[in-house]
Image (cartoon, rainbow, N blue to C red; front, side, top):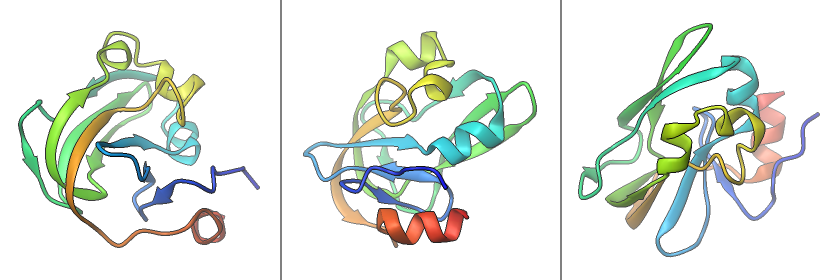
Length: 122
């Protein structure tokens, strides 16, 4: 079973979010592994208002295109330009350099602990 950082919260759609302010959002290693080599990211624009559970972008890999869901509601304050320029960061460091965007959070969606996510992700 994969290790998931205990300090993060997870969505059933394989996104993670931290407790920082602004909160950082990314996809889990489970998603990165399932996608294969990530070749393109479409992320929400800075200033966009997003809702927890809504589609906010896309992740394209050599295998498929997957929708990116937001685990939180709020305003996007930053996107990871390094990951946009080098999408392979999502594969190589999904919980670090491969983060996707940051949000001033107004509310959180239904989130799982690392233990709950590990049990669900299997």
